[in-house]
Image (cartoon, rainbow, N blue to C red):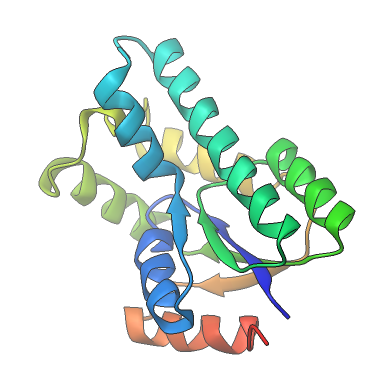
Length: 183
């Protein structure tokens, strides 16, 4: 059976890398909030945090639209972002309406390790400016953001993947076991 595969979870937990690998493996497209945000950020001004949040909301709306359209035709797709409860509820309603299957992989990790990855990415990976307006500059701010996301109500069953002590190949293999086949 075809599936909508949602990859969500902690910042810097490896969501994008996993989405790309799964896309190649299953030969289905993946769409990322981060990439949509970059595309929109090239065309829309985002001088302040409020404007940046508007671009984020638009990116999430695009992901929801894609999920809805794919579910209508019983296709498969991977949607990747740090999804919040409200959007997951909308996607769940859309998918249930069509009778389609949805899987939620939730990537997590040790907060200290994730914060180091986050800072490294912010400083050394030539991030698009649209991603650099996030006010997470201390471990405490980072922890508060992650814990708030982790503690949101579970809308869809979370298939948890701890990425702390795993290389990308181990994470990929674990994800394949959790998702299973698309037939």
